[in-house]
Image (cartoon, rainbow, N blue to C red):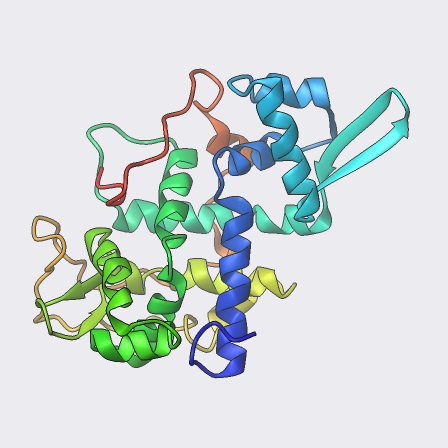
Length: 280
C-alpha cells in the first residue's frame, strides 16, 4: 500500500528504510546489538554487558530483535540457550560508523566529546521523526518545494496543513532550511549530507552490499548546496563549504564495535533526548 504520492519504487524504498529505522532506533537496541558482537552469548552473559537494564527490560528487547530478524536464539539444550547476530543483523553493523561520521560532521559540538554510541542514538532519533524520511527524500530529489506541494506528495490523504509540524521539527533539527513562512523548503548541508547514511540503510534493507549506497538513485551523489543562502535554522553554525565524500561500509573509519560501546557500561546511559534534536 502506497504511503506517499511518489512513484511506487521510491515509495517502497522509503517504506523499507523507515522500517529499518524502526527496528534499530528504540531505546537500547543499538547497545544490545553491539553487546552481541562476537561469539553468541548466554542470556546472563548478555545481561552482564547491559547491566543498566533490569531483567524485565532486557527480555522483551531481545524478543523484539529476534522477531525483527536481527538476533538469533539458539537452543543447544534445554538449559543452554545463546543469542547472537543473524547474518542480517551482522550486516547492519557497518552502517553504524557511517552514522558516526555524519554526526561528527554535522551535529553541533558538545562541551565535551560524546561517545560514538550516543552520537548514533541522537542521529537515529532525528531520522525517525514522523514523515522525516519521506520529506527528506522529496527535498533531496526536487531541491526546493513549498509546504503545500510537500503535503500533496508526502501525505496525500491528509489535510495539507498537517505537513507543517514535521517540517518545523526538521528545521529545528537542522536538517531542513527555509527563509520563512510561505517560502520554499530545502535540505540544509546536514540534511544533504545524510546521503551515505540513507543510501546504506536502503541497500541493507534490500540485502545489497553497502557499497551500493553510492549508486542510490536519490542519495548516491550529494549535490552542491547554494552558497548564498543563510543557515536559517542554525544561525550560529557555519555551513561547510563542501560536503563530505560518500562513505560506505567499505570505507568506514578504522574502529571496532567495542569503540562504539565504550563508556556505555560504566554508567547508566543518558535519557532519550528531548524534542528539538541533539543541539549539543
